[in-house]
Length: 323
Length: 227
Image (cartoon, rainbow over all chains, first blue to last red; front, side):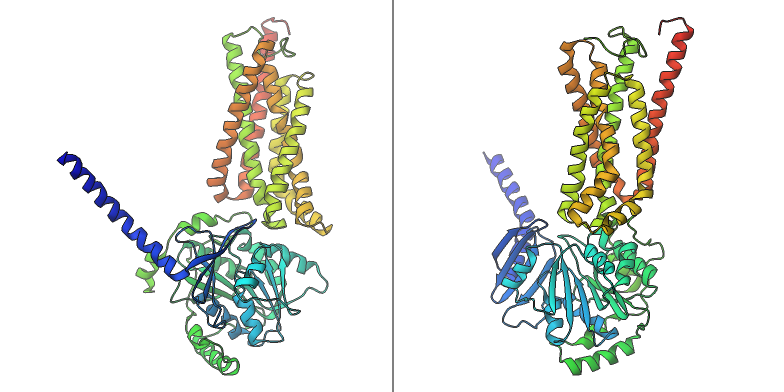
């Protein structure tokens, strides 16, 4: 009897030790995102909308560790709660007065909504593959379309192919690549052939900005692919998240030194009065960044994206570059 | 029930060691074709996505739909042909044709898909047509394999159920293995190289079958066996 009691206590203790961190993670996540106010199984995603106070969060799937797609404070719509949406404004440093913008991937619609707010004449096309996302962004996250901000329910690559078929081909000053499925960017939106198609709709003074994660080998492959297609590519590494922006300027657009980036950011900040400090974003430019020399560009033929994504480089980078 | 191949290779004496060896080879061919069919189906998705996007119609509708349709036509065709042709000749020719086609896919994907896209067809009908053009013919041919193998294995009507079950079970298991290996591992390699190497392997197997049959029949003729 005593022996049984001892085993029971032992098993109980092991369970507690094992479940304690899991419990804290769950509590942490629930505290940050609140309760589920809407859920929808769409063709592509399990969409969950959470609300905690005035903060609304969009996620695809409930699994712990999944990335948040978008987060909005509905009482303070212009505040950027996630670092990546601020980082995406780095495109303005290269083209401060965009006339036309293309965004692949809508999510909560923060980027197009904010760009529309600061640039009332900006024409924006958004390509979003999931037909259930635009109504959710509109209903819960303060996004709305108008005659200059249009959402096209289409695969990003197909949308660009269709634009390329039009005569004359419409050109964009800023192209934002932010199409994620639950886990990562679909492979066909990372390859050399795709980026060549993107360059076909990019104005000579335009800039391509891609939201990626910098902690794995896939980052180096993506970086190398951008360099292959656009010849030039600069990186802004987020300091609060694993997000990084790969930025490739068009043929007539210059790459920036940190000083130039800071100067331009200051000017833009004074003119637009952005709700966050663009100078801080400009300070995240790493003009020395180069991809791993062993990295190979991704192509439609060879894109081992899942394998590359599993190859974590965080420890190597922190040891080698002090980041 | 008499077998249409009973007068040619392999010998028709029931349950002899040669017959058993030939039966194992037949089941192996059914398995190989099951494997390569699923490999082609999974790689087919990767072939089409860059041209027609990753919308759900491309993957579930076009690729899986075309494979099912083509297989059903192949089953009918196989059922009809196996009563008219030597099973080994048919299987060898099918494997060579499918292997050759598979090696060609990387070369004619771009012109075919671009042409279809230029026709103005959307991702649904465009990807369905592209899938039909690229994968229809080889899948029809692969569909002829199972009925041919079942027909060859069956010497008496009472064996038909067991043989059908055996062929379906083993080739479907091989399809499962081909599916998992392709989706987990082969997709990490070059699509073109994977299609070409697999095509060469399948075509090579077809050549081996035809050559073995020819050598065997010649040897039997030399020994004075009746053809």
